[in-house]
Amino acid sequence: MHIGYFSSPLSTTGGPSIFDKRVIETISKYDHKNTYTIYGIRPESTQGLRLDGNNFQTKTIKPSGKWLAISVGLTLELKRRPVDLLHATFVAPPIVPCRFIASMVCWSQYSDPTFYPPLMRWRLLYLINRAMKNASAVFCNTEYIKAKIIDRFAFDPERIFIIRPAVGDEMKPVDDKELLNDFLRAAGIEGPYILFLGTLTKRKNVEGLIRAYHILLNESKIEHKLVLLGEKGVYHKEIFDLVNKLKVSDHIVFVDWYPHHELRFFYSGADVFVFPSFSEGFGLPPLEAMACGTPVVASNATSVPEVVGDAALLAEPHRDEDMAEGIFKCLTDRKLREQMIRRGLARALEFRWEDAAIQTVSAYEKIYEAKW
Picture 1 (cartoon, one colour):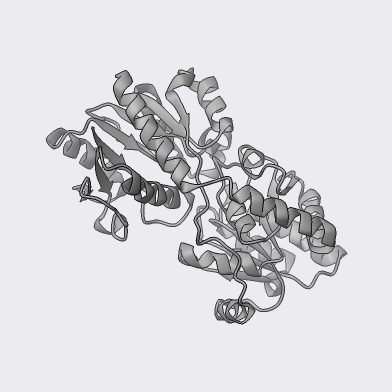
Picture 2 (cartoon, rainbow, N blue to C red):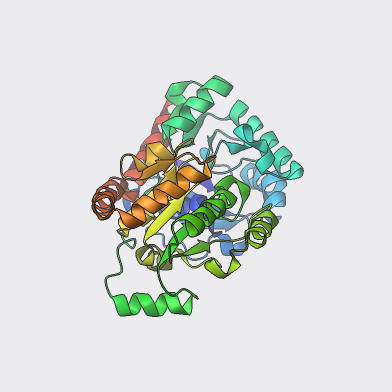
């Protein structure tokens, strides 16, 4: 079987890119029977992939660039050089001249459409709705998303496959304190801190976290800085406006994105990691923080509770006081901290890239043999 793998986020930052890269690389270690073509929207998309075996090749779609590749380029490529099964992991082209699998990585485009600018929202909904109408099968990361797909699209549950992202071996505590402190100082961080990691955008509820932090500063007199690590997303201006309005700029450290393998330094140095999102299709950072021995406060919304289990303190993302209370408990209750760290380390071990890769290949073969 010849499988085409199309990931438009590949080589960008964020969870979808990490997931696709790791799954592709791990599949290449296990599957030497099927043939794979990995499509990139530009040359750098597939650079750096560590692929084992001669049954994997990479190809840059022409015309290249995100929207040209999606709307025209991949369709033309598949007509010229057909594959048996295409897996489109973020969005699929409007016309796919072969059987294909669509991935549903998030639900906020339906539940919270105002998180997206109008044009972006229209394109996403058009492409996703069309894919859901024509796909042979759907991949998602959680039971929450699976239930949403069934409810909205009446999709056959047998054709929906849950493939969970995982935590790599590189995500582990940094035990060398001198090395850790040198790294953090170079990143502009000194002293104790609370960490958020993710795109600075409305969906991640960064504004709610800043308000919760403001409550902590005023009511508990904590010495911790708030470190916001991530790229600026849509509507990020409101975040900076809020920082200025609350007059907390001296207490907040903005850090641009770092390579994924270096994120363990930020997790390991934090006294608590906060994941306040309104909506997530999965949410990898809480698990990575747990793997690095950091207690986690996370929102109780959408897929997040399913991912973190009993290894995080859950807070209502629309209640800033609730979030502030969870952070304060993690900072001050020693017994609770130790309990959360133990649970977190155990929880992170349940998510393995080998499992994700093996389940993915098994699903490919089932879909192909079933002739859906």
